[in-house]
Amino acid sequence: MNKKKIVCFGDSNTWGYNAETDGRFDDDVRWTGVLGNELGSDYSVVEEGLNGRTTVFEDPLNEGLSGIKHLFPTIMSQSPMDLLIIMLGTNDTKQRFSATPQNIADGVDRLIKKAVISNVWRNEPKILIIAPIIIDRMCYFSHVAGGMGSLCAEKSQDLPALMMKCAQMNNCEFMDCNDYAKVNEIDYMHLDAVSHKVFGKAVAEKVKQIL
Image (cartoon, rainbow, N blue to C red; front, side):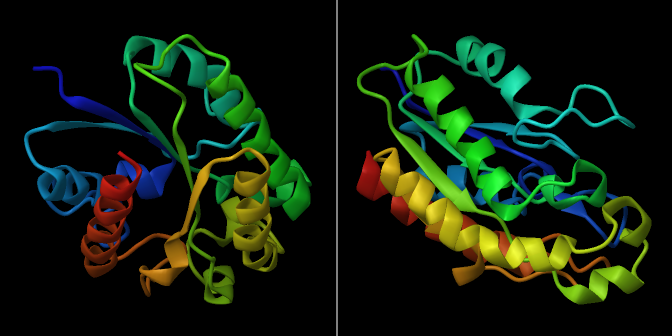
């Protein structure tokens, strides 16, 4: 029996960054792990999270983080797929990219269009767009302030509405992470452990509806 293949393509909040340890949450804590446990043995959940990943922007300080350049080889290696989950946009708010919220949503649009035309689907293309967590302004007083720069929190507030519109225009499914999760109280931009659990269960219910 072939399991239903779900690929989760995201950044550090998909990778499972733990701000308390500067490491990674355990497998059964990360929302992707919770998703897999909730769905059961008929599904295969593939974690494709990368710290610092953007939608389409090349990071001048760190190589290999542009999502658009890694999407095709990633989904080709995991084909045939039944569902692609994309949760990106947080790193695009960094000051050094000078991107507007609409620019960031347009980056997601490019990812969708690239995925849809790729020969990776078991049946028809199915994509779930998840709006990333809204960054709290307290991050400006945390250890991530230097890397993120100014206005990241303000930009992130506009992303859920823009990404919902992007998903609708591309006939994709949509979820807003902020309906289920909150940021930790250390760097104020990564999910805390409780949020991973709640969010993972919510994504599982959405996936069951889609597949």
